[in-house]
Length: 255
Ligand SMILES: Nc1nc2c(c(=O)[nH]1)N[C@H]1C(S)=C(S)[C@@H](COP(=O)(O)O)O[C@H]1N2
Ligand SMILES: [Mo]
Image (tube, rainbow, N blue to C red; front, side, top):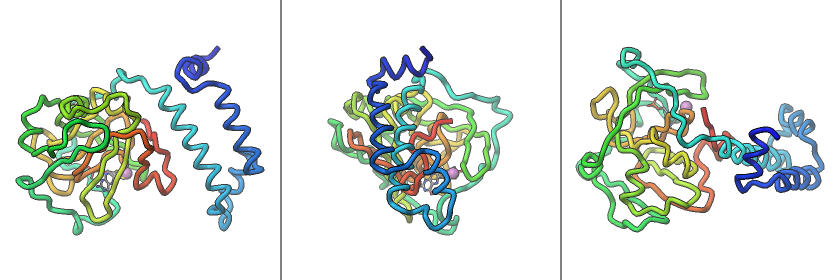
């Protein structure tokens, strides 16, 4: 039995569920994976709902497999401080001219969903929590990567101090930017030691274009899972999806 088969067996995702899921998908849509792939590569038919639903279901199936393979203790590769880019590359779904200027003095971080704390956090309160920093690589699906040093509060610490139910499935992030950007992660990734509420870049407070006063940094995931201008964190059992995820990007998006 392979590792993945053992994980499927031991992890709650039963092998019979997988087989049933595949059978259901093939029967309901009258398609095989091969035909779906061919159709998806053919313009004009890409948005037909059955192909779209099929590919999305396969992507969600992939999410589950990736989540089962994720080792909650394994660290993303770290690099020497000498490799840290002095000036990081900006990216967002809008230009630098539309970057929001959030006032750090009045900025608040709401916590909602399966948490006991109801009072929003201030920036000073976050600064008073234990911090960590890692030199890691940021990888954007648009085809670039860069090494940087990001520091801040471990999300695990923040969730514990917010009285979050750590057995919930998802943690979702909402952003106060021109497109109301959002994304979400599984709880195992939220509790990973390198996942932080990021307050600094190269030991200095992050600047507006990089999400000031707070963005989330998750070194085990792709660039679009690194939300900037975060103003709300929600703990939930309902799949929260995300901005790019709704366009079909794979939700788990592990590196
Ligand atoms: N609020 C917000 N966060 C966002 C985005 C965005 O458009 N809005 N883009 C994402 C993408 S695709 C990438 S690659 C990174 C870029 O982060 P950087 O500006 O620090 O390089 O931010 C992510 N977080
Ligand atoms: Mo990206």
